[in-house]
Structures are given as C-alpha cells and as structure tokens.
Image (cartoon, rainbow, N blue to C red):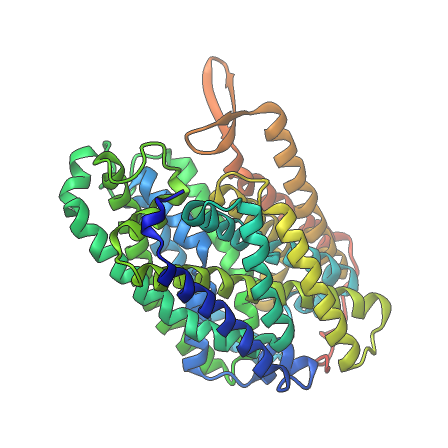
Length: 499
C-alpha cells in the first residue's frame, strides 16, 4: 500500500464523484434503449467521433496500463517497439480488410458470422470462445490491484465494489451508456496519464537515470527477452482480427467508412498512449532504485505507484478516476459482448429462434451478470496480467480465427463440418496444451509462466506456456481442412438475421 499521505480526502472525494457520475449516466440513458439492436449495437448509428472515443478507451484498458507498463518495467522499450507497433499494424490491416465487409452484412455479434456460414453448432462454439474472451477478468483483476496499492483494501473487495458500478450502468443503458461513459473515460485516461508521466520523469531524473541502472538490452527495440517468447506474444496479437468487442464497434458504426476512419484516428492515439505507459514503467524502475518506491514493489504496480507519488493532491484523485475509467471502459464493453453471446448466440438458436426484443434484452442482461460473476471468479487465478491475457487470446484465436477468416475471404467450399471441427479442435488443443505444460513444466518466477525443458540428442529445448498458438492454431486449421474434405457443402449464406 502507498503511504496515506499520498491519497488525500480530496482525492477520494473526486473518485467517489466520478463513480456517481457513471451510474447517473446509466440511469439517464436507461429510457433511451427501446430495442435489442439499440441496446447491443446502438442502433448502428455511431459516428466517427464517438467511435474514436469508445475504441480508444475500450481497447487500451488496464490490461494495457498495467500489462504494458509491467512489460516495460521488466524488459524496457521492447514493450513498445516489439509489441505495441506490431499490434497496431494488425489494426491497420483490420481497418482496410474487415470494416466494409462486416458492416455491410449487418451482423450483431462475432459468433453470428459462424452461424450464418457454418450453421448452429459452429455459432455456439464461437459463442463459447467469444464469451471466454469477453468476461471482464482482466479489468476486475486490475481494479483489485488499484485498491490494494492505493487504499490498502483487499484486492477482491475493491474489485467487487468498483466492478459493480460498471455493471450497473451497463445493465441500465447498454452500448450507448458504454459509449458515452467511454468518452468521459477517454479524456480522463489520456490527460491524467500524460501529466503523471511528465512529473514522474522530472522526479527521477529522466531516462538518463533509467539508463544508469538498466540491464543489457533494456534500451534495444527487441530487448533481451527470448526471441521465441517475443514472437509468441506477437502471435497472440492476431486475436485482434477476431476480437468480439472490436467487431461490435464495427457493427455499431453508421457506415463502414466511419468505422475505418475511427480506427485510423484511434491508432494515432494508441501510439501516444502506449509510449506514455512504456515510459512510465521504465521510469518507475528508476524510482525503485532511488528509494522513492518500495524495493519489493510488484512490477504490476510500478506505473500506478510512480505516478501517484509524482502527482500533487487533487490531481491524484483525477488520476485515480482516470485509471478507474480505463478499467471500466473495458469491463462494460466486454461484459455487454459476453451477455450478447449468451442471449443472441446461445439462447436464441438453441431455445427460441423467434425470440422477441424483450426476451433478448432480458437474457442479455442476465448474460451480462453471468459474465461479470465468471470474470470475478477468474480474476485472481493468474498472478500476472500478461499470462491471463495470453490464455484468453489463445483460446479465442485457436477456436475462431480460421473459420472466421475463411468465411470472410475464402470463396471456395464452406462445409458446416469445417467450421464446427475448426472451433472444436482449437478448443480441445488449447485446453490440452495448458494442462500438459502445467504438468510437465516448471514455474518460472521471472516471467510468471510455466516452461517445459527437455533435450533431444543432447540438445536442450524449451517449450513455454506462451507458445500455445504454435500448436493450437495449426490443429484448428487441420480440423477445418478435414471438415472441408469430408463435410457436405453448405448452401449460400442465409439472408441477414433480423432482430
């Protein structure tokens, strides 16, 4: 916990006021969500400015604020040059190749793509993948860490209280409430992080102080981490191409052009924000070395602790509100996606294909609550955010990347069996790999992962937990090809599913 003197009564009052404002927005929007489509994809009426704000705040949540700064604290600028830049390159590809096609076909959710091209079974398996990825475990984990570091409150208690605030306004207002709160959260996030990093830089003596204590490779673009681990992290970034929350924003755009423009503007913002977060993690390392921060500080907490130390009273409260905003902007979006998965992609095809708006709305809200509970249960299983993120990204990518990309780009035979087998083999392969590596491997405290070491002919080899996609994605592709070979060709995609 940080010293009490760093968190004043004014700071706490600012945070409480922010939380009350978020709930107030949910109450205000509540009367303006008359239909399921309005609740889930904002009536497909979002313009570029609102899309920019909701994209920028949602996809750079606390997993980025904590995870990227943790990466930078431990390994240096590789967090930016070896990780961030490549991930944003994937967003550029998505803007050019996905936005127009997805917006034109008026999907509601990512699993609906699988349902429309491969049938009900593939759609339901896709819903399992999307739901697993979208449960707000990362954001709840980070909220807990905030409370533990700043207030000395048990992590699970802080996550419970603060997470419930985001849950309430999401249930009340749907995607419009999410988008409007995201706009406020976007401003808080950018302004407070920028001020905090500048002040922290002045306190520690800039990057010259970091360079004095940095390990070899700390200032090299590709760093000193094992190359195969870096490639594994980068490989996990292809989950962007099947990110259900990203797809939801495209579905909600007024036009494909507005979606594409919003993505490009958001990329510029992300470049600046990620550099600030990377710099903050590195500067916090110098602050620890100089005794400004505790020697045993967890790398997850480095940026948060350093910025709070540097800011004066009042601005600390604004910063904490911005940090909370960052978590909530991600939590609300993905909780809504996960709830939609259970209602629209599981309940509707299995129980009631002709479900009314009222039924879909009710089951979506139930699904949001279920996803929140699941996220809370999972949030404290992993000690490091990167490990948790890589697991969920691996599961999603292994199950749906191959059939989704084939549905969008491939003009050849589309057999329902291909989509189903690809999803199913990806699921089984991911679970099997993680169980095997936990059984055969040994935990590595430095990287917070499991590593299986063995030798063949006297030559040593290592398989890291993060290498999962090297194995699972080819298995998913193999399942797809087997399905194409032995399955019956499907009929042309059904007409748009209306709600």
